Image (tube, rainbow, N blue to C red; front, side, top):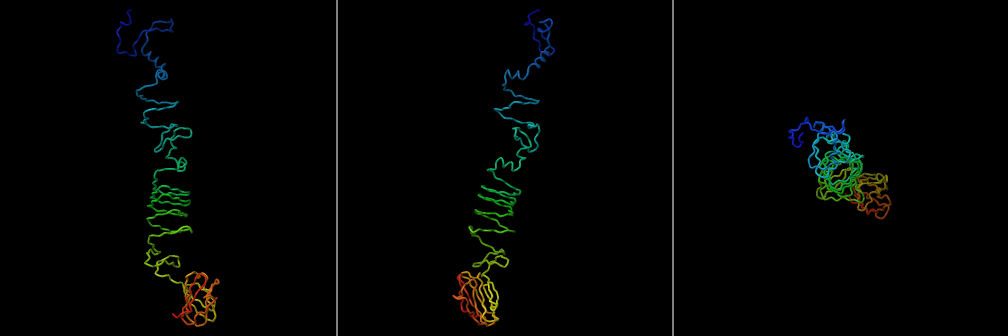
Length: 344
């Protein structure tokens, strides 16, 4: 047999090719035999593991393309480059996420779908953090039961309905929609308003420490602007209108019954003598003027005042007996001062 090195190499090599070797553990031992390359390949495949490869060297520069699954029991660390997910992603429970769901860490540190930001209510969001520097654009309604503290601006296109709680406003509110106010709103700062206010129910209340500073024109209950020198006068319904002069209240009394009169103009008669007409104490305001006019009869009558006020320094004063005579009385806030009466 010639030297092995002198034999020609086989090409190509196939799995059915053979080579000669020694079977160490055979019977008898160390017998020379043929070995199939396919048998040798099967032997290597069954005895060489990934651990053998990694023990030999666990660093490579080539790309790895896997068509099977990777089961990871240790840590997976990426120290450079990026993680690109071209397929679907399953969470810790092996579930695929639905449209809009996010991966969020649960209490055990596991990433799961279904408890992400899209499924959190406002209370859960605010429990994590209730401060933001971004703008809030609302197109729906805001129902408020607690307090709102606003430092920036609010741009509101829908309705704000406040049933309880307070709004503490430090910044500006730009309002293009409607505000429906059911409870009371306490305003301690300034309000700059460009549009109209419509109060269907309720009222504005100003305490003793506040004031109204009006620079604009004022319309009365008939939507009319006042003329030069006109005054606002209330009617019996409490509605005010612009008028050129204050309309006086009137009453008619019979002096014989010692009546108490409460009006700006008092028309009187005297069906019997020596009766006294008493000016009501509510009229006794400094600068108040009361006029008494005798409509009929010429019987004697007097004028006095309730609440201990004097008439020209005395308790009562005689009224003129002439028909259609006019007596004018003016208060200094304590007592009354009346003339002797003149005919109309």
